[in-house]
Image 1 (cartoon, rainbow, N blue to C red):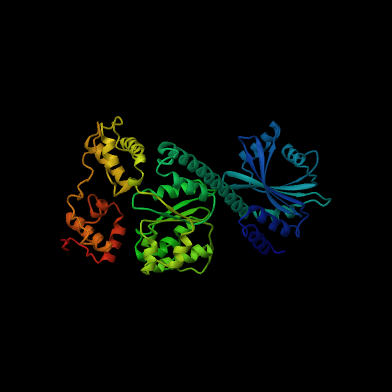
Image 2: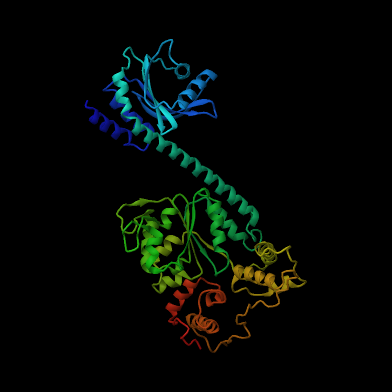
Length: 514
């Protein structure tokens, strides 16, 4: 065969496979037509281990990726290190006889190979030795210098293939190390924040019993409860108690994603799918593959997005925006909402079929006022946690009667409000004792709000709109930031905006909210 054609055909086979063993076998079959080839191997020299590591072997029966370490005698090691120092770059031919270098005889004997001749081609990038290719003839026919000249043409393709394999294995090793680190860090975080969810034996006992029953399954779970009760904590508990605990846990706040970006965020997009799509992007569903996706505030999802979510739930497959490739997924769905989805279904604000798909195993997380027994433990937990975050020299103690004040309060903002109350108390009195005399935090108290007697009933939407308007008047129309309306109400700013749109409340400082 012409040299140029030989080079092209062999290079296509060497570089035509991502797996090094498949590439080796493909070129092995090709070279068999040109020379008496019985076996090919790729190997690295491990100086620290004083051994040669074989990483791939090809024979007429096939090829396989291996990890064989061949221990070397002092003489064999001296020979190979001398060859590396001399920077031998060209392949060389050896006949198996009394003059065969010790290193090769030891390797043949260790692997049970009976060769009549062999070709060794060092693989190096510049002055750096990275490995070698060995071609062995085990029959009566032997290699010739013409065969060596042909093999020399393939030095560069084999260097590229071996370099890519080494880098790939380094990436896999680092990935495994990162996975181990993440697992260790997660255990440390659990240790720091407490291995048990506070309230497991009291207010959340029934909830945790339900978590234990459903965690091992792949059934969808719907978490119901007011804002701030800790639905995200329960979602975490379900995931990390399941067989998917080593997989990803991806949280999506459905109320925080602008309508125009929902498809891109959830499903991903291909490069050029729309203006600004400068590269391919994996969506949240794709990132949650082999794990769990937590769809928080599912009631805020627009109807069009609900329709596309239903398909993912039913078929466990997606297509990126701008793409036509179907991507299969293996994910577990957990959804949460503080809204009445059944009422939304009746008002055509939430798809009935999606509700039935999500409502397989509903878990109601009780508000804090229904689990007053948990307040002392939660308070102590938040005091310790916030003292560390605020870098206080010690953990302040509670004043006499402080717990009674906390347990008597109704906690409209639930656990999240309790956490904020504790942090505010620590800021105001970092040395303690903590008293919690003012739990309103500057918000209107029941004495300051209009009380409606039984003859003046009005709709829940009307009450909600009036309360939001009252808060907006206090913040001069400001929604975001510290002391903004969203913070006072204890909800996400985007969630508040969505509520305002639905209730017909205008935006901006120029609006009158009286």
